[in-house]
Amino acid sequence: MEIKIKEENSNIRLDNYMTSIIDTSRSNITKHIKDGTIKVNGKEVKPGYLLRLGDIISYNEWNESTLVEKENIPLDIYYEDKDVMVVYKKSGMVVHPGNGNYHGTLVNALTYYTDELSSINGSDRPGIVHRIDKDTSGLLLISKNNKSHQILSDDFKNKRIKRKYIALVSGVINESSGKINAPIGRDILDRKKMCVTDKNSKNAVTNFTVLKRYKNSTLIECVLETGRTHQIRVHMAYIGHPVINDPVYGKKINDYGQLLHAYYLGFNHPTTKEFMEFTCPLEPRFEEMLNEFKNS
Image (cartoon, rainbow, N blue to C red):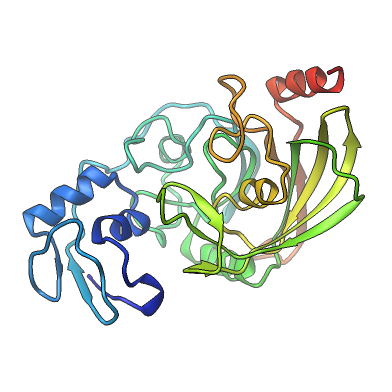
Protein backbone atom coordinates (compact mmCIF):
# COMPACT_ATOMS: atom_id res chain seq x y z
CA MET A 1 0.00 0.00 0.00
CA GLU A 2 1.11 3.58 -0.60
CA ILE A 3 0.29 6.86 1.12
CA LYS A 4 1.25 10.28 -0.23
CA ILE A 5 1.91 12.81 2.50
CA LYS A 6 -0.16 15.98 2.39
CA GLU A 7 0.82 19.30 3.93
CA GLU A 8 -1.20 18.74 7.13
CA ASN A 9 0.85 15.62 7.90
CA SER A 10 4.29 17.06 7.16
CA ASN A 11 6.81 17.50 9.99
CA ILE A 12 5.31 14.53 11.87
CA ARG A 13 7.54 11.61 12.86
CA LEU A 14 7.04 8.55 10.68
CA ASP A 15 6.44 6.24 13.65
CA ASN A 16 3.86 8.60 15.16
CA TYR A 17 2.04 9.01 11.85
CA MET A 18 1.87 5.28 11.15
CA THR A 19 0.65 4.59 14.68
CA SER A 20 -2.18 7.07 14.12
CA ILE A 21 -3.44 5.32 10.97
CA ILE A 22 -2.82 1.65 11.80
CA ASP A 23 -4.35 -0.08 14.81
CA THR A 24 -1.20 -1.51 16.34
CA SER A 25 1.34 -0.53 18.95
CA ARG A 26 4.07 2.05 18.39
CA SER A 27 6.69 -0.59 19.22
CA ASN A 28 5.30 -2.80 16.47
CA ILE A 29 5.38 0.10 14.01
CA THR A 30 8.99 0.79 15.02
CA LYS A 31 9.87 -2.86 14.42
CA HIS A 32 8.41 -2.77 10.90
CA ILE A 33 10.23 0.48 10.06
CA LYS A 34 13.55 -0.99 11.22
CA ASP A 35 12.85 -4.21 9.32
CA GLY A 36 12.21 -2.22 6.15
CA THR A 37 8.57 -3.28 5.89
CA ILE A 38 7.68 0.40 5.99
CA LYS A 39 9.66 2.65 3.63
CA VAL A 40 9.63 6.28 2.55
CA ASN A 41 10.23 7.06 -1.12
CA GLY A 42 11.39 3.47 -1.60
CA LYS A 43 14.14 3.79 1.02
CA GLU A 44 14.59 2.53 4.54
CA VAL A 45 14.50 5.36 7.10
CA LYS A 46 14.61 5.70 10.86
CA PRO A 47 11.43 5.71 12.99
CA GLY A 48 12.01 9.38 13.83
CA TYR A 49 12.14 10.48 10.19
CA LEU A 50 10.19 13.74 9.77
CA LEU A 51 7.70 13.43 6.95
CA ARG A 52 7.75 16.00 4.16
CA LEU A 53 5.11 17.14 1.70
CA GLY A 54 4.97 14.69 -1.20
CA ASP A 55 6.73 11.82 0.57
CA ILE A 56 5.46 8.38 -0.45
CA ILE A 57 5.12 5.87 2.38
CA SER A 58 4.98 2.29 1.16
CA TYR A 59 4.19 -0.74 3.29
CA ASN A 60 2.82 -4.22 2.98
CA GLU A 61 -0.12 -5.28 5.09
CA TRP A 62 1.19 -7.71 7.67
CA ASN A 63 -0.28 -10.39 9.84
CA GLU A 64 0.73 -9.86 13.43
CA SER A 65 -1.34 -12.77 14.67
CA THR A 66 -4.32 -10.50 14.93
CA LEU A 67 -6.74 -12.74 13.12
CA VAL A 68 -9.83 -12.36 15.24
CA GLU A 69 -10.20 -15.24 17.64
CA LYS A 70 -13.79 -16.26 18.22
CA GLU A 71 -14.56 -16.00 21.91
CA ASN A 72 -17.69 -17.10 23.72
CA ILE A 73 -18.47 -13.75 25.32
CA PRO A 74 -22.15 -13.03 26.05
CA LEU A 75 -23.68 -10.36 23.82
CA ASP A 76 -26.44 -7.98 24.88
CA ILE A 77 -28.44 -7.79 21.65
CA TYR A 78 -31.18 -5.17 21.47
CA TYR A 79 -32.20 -5.94 17.89
CA GLU A 80 -31.20 -8.26 15.05
CA ASP A 81 -32.34 -9.13 11.54
CA LYS A 82 -30.61 -10.31 8.36
CA ASP A 83 -28.99 -6.90 7.76
CA VAL A 84 -28.17 -5.25 11.08
CA MET A 85 -27.71 -5.72 14.80
CA VAL A 86 -27.96 -3.24 17.64
CA VAL A 87 -25.80 -4.34 20.55
CA TYR A 88 -24.92 -2.93 23.95
CA LYS A 89 -21.24 -2.49 24.79
CA LYS A 90 -20.41 -2.29 28.46
CA SER A 91 -17.84 0.10 29.89
CA GLY A 92 -14.35 -1.42 29.82
CA MET A 93 -14.83 -3.44 26.61
CA VAL A 94 -12.78 -2.56 23.52
CA VAL A 95 -14.76 -2.53 20.27
CA HIS A 96 -12.23 -4.29 18.01
CA PRO A 97 -8.74 -5.86 18.28
CA GLY A 98 -5.70 -3.62 18.04
CA ASN A 99 -3.08 -1.77 20.07
CA GLY A 100 -2.37 -4.79 22.23
CA ASN A 101 -6.04 -5.65 22.85
CA TYR A 102 -6.58 -8.83 20.87
CA HIS A 103 -8.94 -10.67 23.21
CA GLY A 104 -12.14 -9.84 25.02
CA THR A 105 -13.28 -7.29 22.45
CA LEU A 106 -16.77 -6.85 21.05
CA VAL A 107 -15.55 -8.21 17.71
CA ASN A 108 -14.25 -11.38 19.40
CA ALA A 109 -17.78 -11.87 20.73
CA LEU A 110 -19.49 -11.01 17.43
CA THR A 111 -17.41 -13.46 15.36
CA TYR A 112 -18.24 -16.26 17.81
CA TYR A 113 -21.94 -15.41 17.60
CA THR A 114 -22.22 -15.21 13.79
CA ASP A 115 -20.28 -15.53 10.55
CA GLU A 116 -22.61 -13.03 8.89
CA LEU A 117 -20.74 -9.77 9.34
CA SER A 118 -19.70 -7.15 6.79
CA SER A 119 -16.06 -7.23 5.66
CA ILE A 120 -15.64 -3.66 4.36
CA ASN A 121 -13.51 -2.54 7.31
CA GLY A 122 -11.13 -5.48 7.13
CA SER A 123 -10.68 -8.79 8.92
CA ASP A 124 -10.10 -7.21 12.33
CA ARG A 125 -13.27 -5.07 12.26
CA PRO A 126 -16.03 -7.26 10.79
CA GLY A 127 -19.43 -5.64 11.10
CA ILE A 128 -18.14 -2.48 12.76
CA VAL A 129 -19.82 0.62 11.32
CA HIS A 130 -18.86 3.03 14.13
CA ARG A 131 -17.13 2.91 17.50
CA ILE A 132 -17.30 4.24 21.02
CA ASP A 133 -14.38 4.46 23.44
CA LYS A 134 -13.38 1.49 25.58
CA ASP A 135 -14.66 3.04 28.80
CA THR A 136 -17.81 4.54 27.27
CA SER A 137 -20.89 2.34 27.59
CA GLY A 138 -23.81 2.20 25.20
CA LEU A 139 -25.36 1.17 21.91
CA LEU A 140 -23.56 0.25 18.70
CA LEU A 141 -24.91 -0.44 15.22
CA ILE A 142 -23.48 -3.56 13.56
CA SER A 143 -23.76 -4.44 9.87
CA LYS A 144 -24.20 -8.06 8.78
CA ASN A 145 -23.42 -7.58 5.08
CA ASN A 146 -21.48 -5.19 2.87
CA LYS A 147 -24.50 -3.67 1.15
CA SER A 148 -25.99 -2.59 4.46
CA HIS A 149 -22.61 -1.39 5.66
CA GLN A 150 -22.17 0.91 2.66
CA ILE A 151 -25.62 2.44 3.18
CA LEU A 152 -25.08 2.95 6.90
CA SER A 153 -21.63 4.43 6.40
CA ASP A 154 -23.11 6.92 3.98
CA ASP A 155 -25.85 7.72 6.50
CA PHE A 156 -23.21 8.41 9.15
CA LYS A 157 -21.30 10.63 6.76
CA ASN A 158 -24.43 12.62 5.93
CA LYS A 159 -25.60 12.88 9.55
CA ARG A 160 -28.71 10.77 9.08
CA ILE A 161 -27.88 8.53 12.05
CA LYS A 162 -28.73 10.04 15.43
CA ARG A 163 -26.72 9.42 18.58
CA LYS A 164 -27.31 10.86 22.02
CA TYR A 165 -25.10 10.57 25.08
CA ILE A 166 -25.51 11.21 28.79
CA ALA A 167 -22.51 12.52 30.69
CA LEU A 168 -21.79 13.72 34.19
CA VAL A 169 -19.31 16.58 34.00
CA SER A 170 -17.34 18.48 36.59
CA GLY A 171 -18.59 21.88 37.74
CA VAL A 172 -21.94 23.59 37.37
CA ILE A 173 -22.96 24.69 33.87
CA ASN A 174 -25.15 27.79 34.16
CA GLU A 175 -26.44 27.80 30.57
CA SER A 176 -29.41 25.54 29.81
CA SER A 177 -27.83 24.43 26.53
CA GLY A 178 -24.92 25.15 24.24
CA LYS A 179 -23.04 24.30 21.08
CA ILE A 180 -19.30 23.66 21.05
CA ASN A 181 -17.87 24.26 17.60
CA ALA A 182 -14.14 23.67 17.87
CA PRO A 183 -11.84 21.64 15.56
CA ILE A 184 -10.18 18.54 16.97
CA GLY A 185 -6.81 17.08 16.04
CA ARG A 186 -4.13 14.89 17.55
CA ASP A 187 -2.08 16.39 20.37
CA ILE A 188 1.46 16.91 19.01
CA LEU A 189 2.92 16.39 22.49
CA ASP A 190 1.00 13.19 23.21
CA ARG A 191 -0.10 11.19 20.17
CA LYS A 192 -2.57 9.16 22.26
CA LYS A 193 -4.56 12.29 23.08
CA MET A 194 -6.74 14.57 21.00
CA CYS A 195 -7.13 18.30 21.52
CA VAL A 196 -8.85 21.41 20.22
CA THR A 197 -6.44 22.84 17.67
CA ASP A 198 -6.37 24.56 14.30
CA LYS A 199 -3.43 22.42 13.15
CA ASN A 200 -4.01 19.11 11.36
CA SER A 201 -7.56 19.10 12.69
CA LYS A 202 -11.11 18.38 11.55
CA ASN A 203 -14.32 20.28 12.22
CA ALA A 204 -16.11 19.05 15.34
CA VAL A 205 -19.50 20.11 16.73
CA THR A 206 -21.10 18.97 19.99
CA ASN A 207 -24.50 20.14 21.22
CA PHE A 208 -25.34 19.78 24.90
CA THR A 209 -28.41 20.28 27.08
CA VAL A 210 -28.38 20.46 30.87
CA LEU A 211 -30.55 17.77 32.46
CA LYS A 212 -29.77 18.36 36.15
CA ARG A 213 -27.42 20.48 38.22
CA TYR A 214 -25.80 19.30 41.42
CA LYS A 215 -23.57 21.07 43.91
CA ASN A 216 -20.31 20.44 42.05
CA SER A 217 -21.35 18.70 38.84
CA THR A 218 -23.84 18.75 35.97
CA LEU A 219 -25.71 15.96 34.21
CA ILE A 220 -25.97 16.69 30.48
CA GLU A 221 -27.23 15.20 27.24
CA CYS A 222 -24.88 15.49 24.25
CA VAL A 223 -25.83 15.24 20.59
CA LEU A 224 -23.03 14.92 18.06
CA GLU A 225 -23.02 16.61 14.66
CA THR A 226 -19.63 15.05 13.88
CA GLY A 227 -17.88 11.92 15.07
CA ARG A 228 -14.29 12.75 16.03
CA THR A 229 -12.16 10.61 18.31
CA HIS A 230 -12.89 11.41 21.98
CA GLN A 231 -15.08 14.31 20.79
CA ILE A 232 -17.33 14.80 23.82
CA ARG A 233 -14.47 14.25 26.25
CA VAL A 234 -12.23 16.76 24.46
CA HIS A 235 -14.94 19.38 24.00
CA MET A 236 -16.20 19.28 27.58
CA ALA A 237 -12.64 19.55 28.93
CA TYR A 238 -12.04 22.43 26.53
CA ILE A 239 -14.89 24.49 28.06
CA GLY A 240 -13.74 23.67 31.59
CA HIS A 241 -16.21 20.90 32.39
CA PRO A 242 -14.38 17.59 31.85
CA VAL A 243 -16.31 14.33 32.03
CA ILE A 244 -16.03 13.00 35.57
CA ASN A 245 -13.65 10.07 36.07
CA ASP A 246 -11.94 10.66 32.71
CA PRO A 247 -8.29 9.62 33.18
CA VAL A 248 -7.09 11.36 30.00
CA TYR A 249 -8.88 14.70 29.91
CA GLY A 250 -9.98 15.02 33.51
CA LYS A 251 -9.31 13.36 36.84
CA LYS A 252 -9.45 9.65 37.62
CA ILE A 253 -11.47 8.84 40.74
CA ASN A 254 -11.81 5.04 40.66
CA ASP A 255 -11.39 2.04 38.36
CA TYR A 256 -14.66 2.64 36.49
CA GLY A 257 -14.49 4.52 33.20
CA GLN A 258 -15.49 8.07 32.37
CA LEU A 259 -19.15 8.81 33.12
CA LEU A 260 -20.22 8.89 29.49
CA HIS A 261 -23.00 6.72 28.13
CA ALA A 262 -24.32 6.35 24.55
CA TYR A 263 -27.96 5.88 25.53
CA TYR A 264 -29.80 6.59 22.25
CA LEU A 265 -29.39 5.34 18.67
CA GLY A 266 -31.71 6.21 15.80
CA PHE A 267 -31.28 5.19 12.15
CA ASN A 268 -33.07 4.36 8.93
CA HIS A 269 -33.00 0.64 8.32
CA PRO A 270 -30.78 0.08 5.24
CA THR A 271 -33.33 -2.19 3.55
CA THR A 272 -36.82 -1.27 4.80
CA LYS A 273 -35.95 2.44 5.29
CA GLU A 274 -38.00 2.35 8.49
CA PHE A 275 -36.69 4.75 11.14
CA MET A 276 -35.70 2.71 14.19
CA GLU A 277 -34.92 4.00 17.67
CA PHE A 278 -33.27 2.33 20.65
CA THR A 279 -32.40 3.47 24.15
CA CYS A 280 -30.54 1.82 27.00
CA PRO A 281 -30.30 2.60 30.74
CA LEU A 282 -27.21 3.71 32.61
CA GLU A 283 -24.97 0.98 33.98
CA PRO A 284 -25.44 0.24 37.72
CA ARG A 285 -21.96 1.56 38.51
CA PHE A 286 -22.72 4.79 36.66
CA GLU A 287 -25.94 5.12 38.68
CA GLU A 288 -24.04 4.54 41.93
CA MET A 289 -21.52 7.26 41.15
CA LEU A 290 -24.28 9.59 39.99
CA ASN A 291 -26.05 9.17 43.34
CA GLU A 292 -22.81 9.93 45.14
CA PHE A 293 -22.41 13.20 43.26
CA LYS A 294 -26.06 14.11 43.83
CA ASN A 295 -25.39 14.08 47.56
CA SER A 296 -21.98 15.76 47.58
